[in-house]
Image (cartoon, rainbow, N blue to C red; front, side):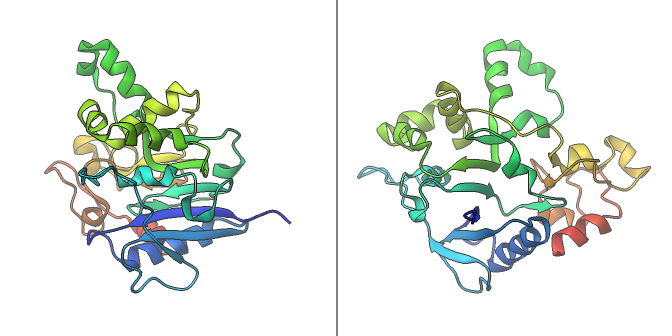
Length: 259
């Protein structure tokens, strides 16, 4: 019998609550037929429902005197994460909506897969002023949705812990550092473009075009993300983040979100 795959997410602090975890778990159950375990690493399991395994947040392992925990997600690359070493896991952030079958995320070959961050945004021609920087940013993976073999990429965490201060000084956010390490080891591979889409850039009409049509889910999309502004909570209250961005009717998104 095939071992169940893992769905991982993380919740700490007060930005997201137990219902966000439970809601995502329902979306996964609706869109993933194969056996799986839904794991939430959290500092507060209160209210997390049946069908979700709540485990303590994994230790980042920072050296003494270094209390910066902004890059907490890198703890997912611990060799001994939750006792799951060797298991195949799909990590999902809490601020996304699953809209179609998740099975293909496990069928695609390769040890590691992630969103190319630039696939969620429109072109940024001014970045080309610095070609080297532009090339690097074009390679960065967005860590909202990635699949990996637990324990197989511990070199990412090792490199961070070797000098956390240098890492946070040299890279703006953890996914940049993570991508650089993956690329150096030949493991930086992306999901097909269009599987993970941006709500504001791929679903909403551009500029005043948002007043001409309601948001629509692109054909082939499996996950809708809320990169930049507006955030997911804003969208569901009708806020577009800009005066010229109308949200309109999002019944299809709300139905998928509520699952």
